[in-house]
Length: 146
Image (cartoon, rainbow, N blue to C red; front, top):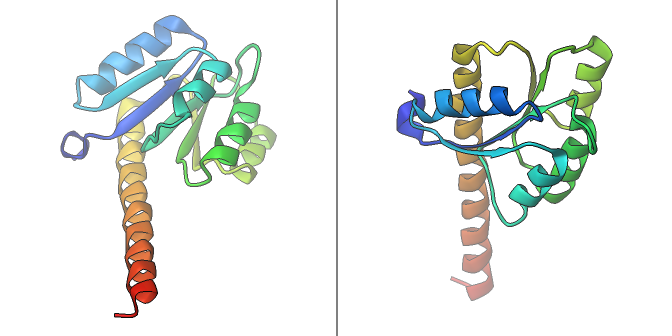
């Protein structure tokens, strides 16, 4: 199912080996994957670029996952974000959800679970884009008085 979707995914994690392995596993399933190894580089990646889903590690040096989430949501409120954590707490996952994360996944990542979530995010993103297009068309029609 995900293969047909050609979802665009941004993976953000400071653990280089984990990041590389997960990116390869997703790319082998037909996804278009971009990686970032810090909150700063993730913010640079989302500048002028939209992703179907952003998979964001919670614990990173510098700008941590929650702060990165806040800043991405400020720029792209409709961005789909899943938080990743090796040491997740209920309090942190609740905070991430309040800030706009779609979901929270514990490491080690179950690839099937992640693929399902990517597929759901892609479908949701398409619906958001479709809704925006309809609103823009209606706006044009009303402005022309047709």
